[in-house]
Length: 200
Length: 406
Image (cartoon, rainbow over all chains, first blue to last red; front, side, top):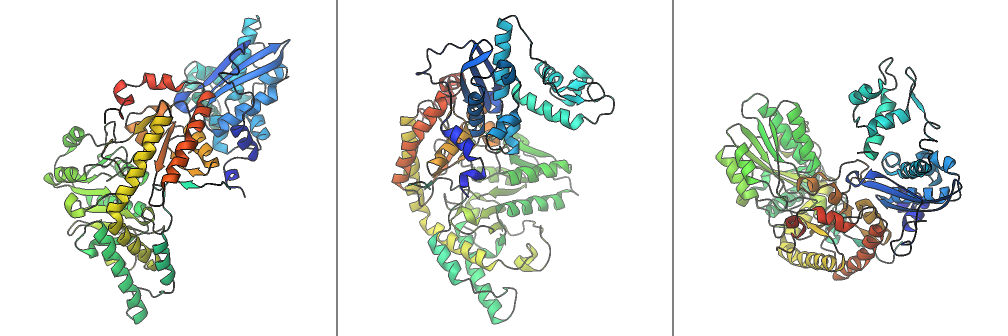
């Protein structure tokens, strides 16, 4: 077994060493994106930025920048390749697990902390929609219900974290999540941790 | 496989040196139980006692019988803290003083005592990683049971002033422990000169086998077994003697002592060369650790704008093996506690690399690293969201120019 593969797949290695569509300060100095989106925080070790050219709701071209580990770079590269030529609505709904699968899998602890590209992409698309008077058009379409008792979704948790919720208590204050049966707490705390990392 | 292979992670572990390997191969059939009275047992016992004398000599211990063999540094450190638990739980003198930059086995042992109700202080360190002596003096009192400070730090190589730390502790009647795992074989270590009661050693850091270490315990210093059983090691550490490990340790210690001065000169020269080449060829870097009170083999460098795991794996693909203080390599979110303790800030700590050189490092190795590293840093910085200059600019001028002030 190749020793490198112990940590990451050959696809990750390929995208890490030879990233696709990465922004090059010299070559791409004339690249004029229609929309940009950035998420993550360098303090947490990962930050990603997407720059999109969009024609008739199709992603015509893309550039990105990433500060982060090998899987952060590889996952952003893979995502950029995936979305070229894609409708922005479909691109908006790509999940971290989709990217991880395309990369031939990632170590479990890397999926949550390093696959932020989809969030940066959504941020860019949101900017684009807003600029075109279509703010929030795709929001909620892919929401997943976490708290079945109160019909609270992952998007609600994400929004609460954006507004400053950082622990179970403050999340409950913001959303009333888990105040009935409480069985969603583990899943909700996972999301809290994940979004907390992205929006810190 | 790469054309070149450069190991620069000697603080993590070292290869078995051929002399030690040869001795271990010769001793493979010395299977006697050193606790047995018959000849085979006595043969093994004689070899073990010779090894003990070599280990004692390496740390300047006059009485070899005060050196107890353990399974390694973690066990030695745990044995000391477990002893403090047993003697401290029923008396007023039970305060533990250690530092925020210790190895996890000391940090977690100290945290365990804190959970058990012991007052525990984790001393801050200055920007070079040296214990803040004013903070230390302020914590000293007749309630202090143990002061435990590492002799040299594994990540940044900073050497602590153990002699002064021990003297101040002794004035209050406290016991003193030092984890010399990284110091032994790299700089002079002397339990007599330093005046410590306990000293931890690990064999695999000095070109010997893994799974063997030692704990020095001064005469009349209290010690309780962590592993109970037979009467081996004077009842301090039960378990059948690890013949091969102990004999390998003895030979590794003997050679380390003989070669100490030569090692310091050679490795120190190569470290200085690597440091100079990195500063010359990579813009916007920061050298971490003390400018002079530092292990001759350890060079810790921050490359803001590039992330540690990405640097590590890029070097790995070129056959260069180093380690990082980045959280991303460990999968947690917090970067190295040592780099944070010296005030680095996550932006710099995430992009830090430890180059630890060793007795087999050559000038060619250093040149290869110095040639390979700059384009890797440049590549990662070009795709980074945050420009290196910006991070460097945010730092205090004083810290940013640590190296220039030397």
